[in-house]
Amino acid sequence: MPTKYVGEVVEIVYMDKDGKLSQRRIEVHGIRGELVYSTCLTSGERRTFRRDRILACKPSPFRRREMEKNNRSITLHG
Image (tube, rainbow, N blue to C red; front, side):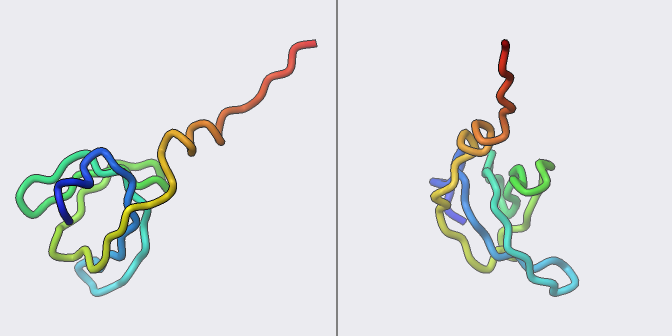
């Protein structure tokens, strides 16, 4: 995963240590060595991924700000 994705939302295909594949949408906070520090946007949890287990990566048209805007509740005063 290129460092240009730091601060961006990307979609990845990830293989865990048991060989199980998953598709995830993450916000990349930093890359240090072989580790990618991020927040999983599905669970909202901080996650660390090994670069060698990321099988595919692409920029996401989805942005974190959009998620926050869509999750705001509307309060009507009246």
